[in-house]
Image (cartoon, rainbow, N blue to C red; front, side, top):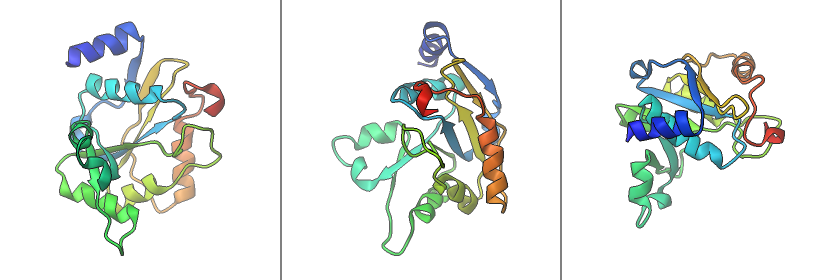
Amino acid sequence: MRWLSKFIYHKLLGWKVTGFSDFDSVKKAVIIAVPHTSWHDFYIGVLLRSVVGIKSNFVGKKALFTFPFGFFFRALGGAPVIRKSNENQVEAIARLFDEHEVFRMAMAPEGTRKKVDKWRTGFYYIAKTANVPIVMFTLDFKNKENKFSEPFYPTDDKEADFKFMKSFYEGVVGKVPEYS
């Protein structure tokens, strides 16, 4: 299956992967994809994880993981979040990192495919709470490139951390340029 993904990704679609590649050394991480501007990001991401040979995950509410779609979502790397009434979402998701030997959670910090002025902060606090690095990657449709950053551990300076992360994405253009 991996050879087919590589053929589609590289030969048919003309994409390339650059940057960090030692994913065997990073068993747990929050992986953020920017800019998220189109539904096309999904299949590029699915192909990408096969091309680079990493298992990645996503989270969803428990109801998504019941019949008839539960098997499909789990096969794609989904993990249900079971919230306790007195627990916030960040803590519930951070707990998943403790429950798995390998858990790389992918998400889009914009929280939508539309243009946003500010990123949501949940991914940042999940990484801090779970004590895992953030790995950034681009969805650069202009250059047909997915570039990965080195793993980055958030500090106690949120403003500086966000400035650093956003600088990684400077000049990156999504599928829908006006939403980038």
